[in-house]
Length: 426
Image (cartoon, rainbow, N blue to C red; front, side, top):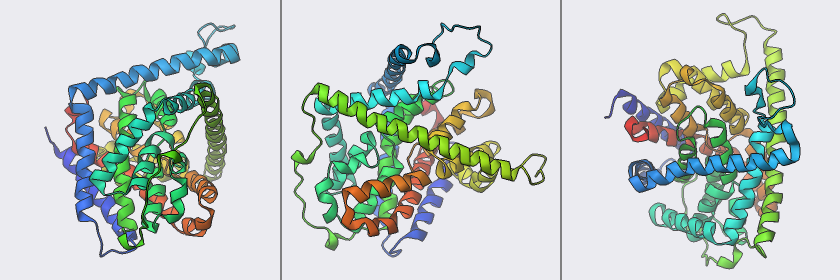
């Protein structure tokens, strides 16, 4: 059944499109057909994934796989770190069992294992076939050319900078619109390794958490393409001919080589995530300390989270969140943008089940599932400066707009999910 809450999400769709149109480099060239097609594609993908019994069973299996990965990873972590990994057999009496969940030992190691598995699956051509299938889907349904379509599909599974690596030799010849599109889509999605980490964080508070996180990253790619095309419209005259060469794809010498290199890549991601979280959480603590010097406002001390909640509460409501949850949801959106999506997911996972409606938790899972944040601006600048140094100045001028597009793309995805009947996700 469609109710007022579903109609409410229409405001989110309209608000996102209007905001991107306001930033457009050519407001007279709004891609109406692409807008309708992209939103319909998002809705159809969600309906298919959660509505078709076979695909729904597959998504349910994803949760089992995530649990298996988490448990297997814990075996390796326990072997290296012993009781520090949070095993049930502790050498002392437990006063607070929940304290056994240590982020560094429960979530970060999962990224290592998934990166190694992704490299192995790529070497075995399984992930390559999946990526090519999605690339063909984006090429046929959204009008992308071969190289950007492949990079867009690869980004869903590999990450915001890793995806474009697969078409590195084509980056200098991409049009401005296509280059902007790749950066925006990279910030609208997440990587396979972080998908599993987010699902691990949410699995105790959100049913089918793994299915929602996987779906969120997939369906946010069309949203990223759409908003990128609105802000920097396509210019066919600037597009140079391309002949996509499969030899450009990443290669490993053997299965062992794939595992070793995948583990090495995962280690870099783990170190980046850990260091970023330490720095940004510390900065927020400093700001909260300064804000605590001011008088209380409405009976509570000022904090970064409260301020962000007030600023982003209208957007959260427009997405489809009930007004009683809007401040809390707005705070999560603000934390995701100003800090990192990891911090926002940790905060979402810490909210007890009874203190947030299930609809809000589902919509926030989709709205938070993207790399668009201030830290990612630096990551993209550093990454693309290596991949295509001759276009660095051009990228500097567009990366903040791309962050804005990526942030709103996940909000658009959440709004589209909010339009659909709640029973679909039951």
